[in-house]
Amino acid sequence: MSNVIKLNKGHINTVSCVAEATPDGINIMSLSKDGIYKHTKLVGYSAMIRQLDSGQFDNTLSEGFGVIAELSLGEQRGWFAPSDEQRVIVWRWMVAGVFIVEQMRANGTAAVSQSDGTIVQVVRYVGKHGGITVYPATERFSLASHIEGLAFEKYTLDNPHQKALMLYQSMVEESPDGGMKLSQWGREGLEMLHDGFIEMLNTEGMPAAPTAH
Image (tube, rainbow, N blue to C red; front, side, top):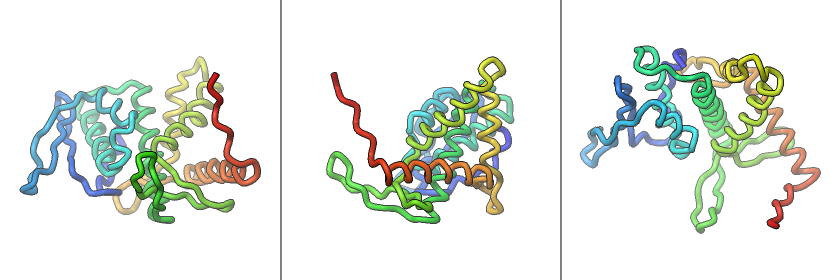
């Protein structure tokens, strides 16, 4: 993760919390009513990666990018040595997050009703066969199925986590604004994936829900 230190922390959403790397973990500070960031809790590095993976920052991507920048800083300073599996989780989150941000900038959002009756603004992907709403969690699931699934199938006995990591790293690159953007290969691959899914929906319809037995 050492080469993601220049991540732009302000990609999307207002930042109500900021992260700070320390020798003991990530210090999370929240914005108080008087406009000052104050310490709230200290989260271990491994626990913070689990929070990223579980969707803790899916509604505040800017905070998630900030956490990743501090994870990188902690690694650079020798406070944390992530495993290959943890690196894969972080880079998968970043690829999905960058994709969501780029789609929001290109296509905006759509109002979607939730099961509890509330309305939320959801990012849209628009491709050559139409458009769909996209979510960070489903993007990560799709990436894991295709990228990591391929790596584990092809390199079962040859460090598949490392191979998946290399693929994720090739899908993003530094942006002129100091943040990260999808590489041409990463963008084309994700467009192909989403266009294929939309085409399937257009021709075959939504897959039937599993039947409980």
